[in-house]
Image 1 (tube, rainbow, N blue to C red):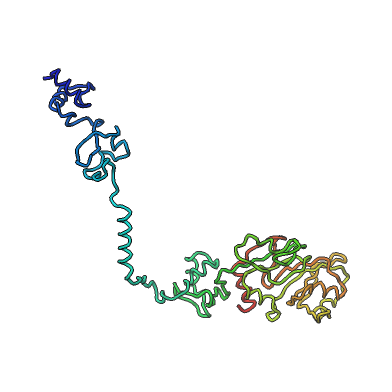
Image 2 (tube, rainbow, N blue to C red):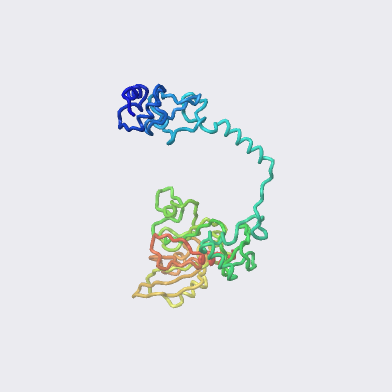
Length: 365
């Protein structure tokens, strides 16, 4: 039975005694908590979770509970706040403890020997790279595609056909071939440029003229040109960072042929080709053409093809001029197996793996 006296005393003792919706059962519990300062089971919105050092439920001095200051729902567990003095959550471990644990772990594993991974195939402990990885880097497709090349017995290392997967190869010393053509196993680059007229055949020019280096300024590695073309001659010129290949391509010993198209004004004698093949006396010795033919004739204008393996300066222009036919326009259309094709003037293209292999085969690499 509700009494007016108990309701007043509950209102003075705590929040539970205010008039927020009274019920008979609730008023009886509030009456039982008379004189204790707060009801034994307050409503959820009235609970306080600030636990002091002694574990007693004292009101927060700041006027806000731990849950309002970022605590988890339900407040900190009993004993977590002990020692903090303010009821705040303390970390389970300190930085000093973590540092000591890390030091103990280092000491524990310092004396242990390095663990060797299990062998996946015989010879896995050897140095070098897997063959399929080298082929993939050289541009022969994905590693799976390169594994199929090995399965088809199309790959050989140092003259022996490889039939097993996972063989390790030393890119610096081992010779790798696919279908009989040498693979550039290192990070070499090979380009063909259709040099326009007016471009100097140097990588840099002190006079500020347009040069070959202007076409490869965005390359990470330093490239250099293979041979030269005079400023007014157009056509194929190779750029690479493979020093040995560049040296052999330009050395007379290997006789790499170059094909030129020259525009001259006739009429020309029938034996002009024979004169060029027999040799033309120049100021620095005889110069001989390997092949000569007339490609096109329009009136007195002739387009002739000259093939030779020499690389002396202005060799084609000097030979034809000495024979009595100065050259109006000269284009190199082939350097060994690399042809100009439909490559536009000023365009740079990367050589394919087959073309690189053919170049190396040309000079016994």
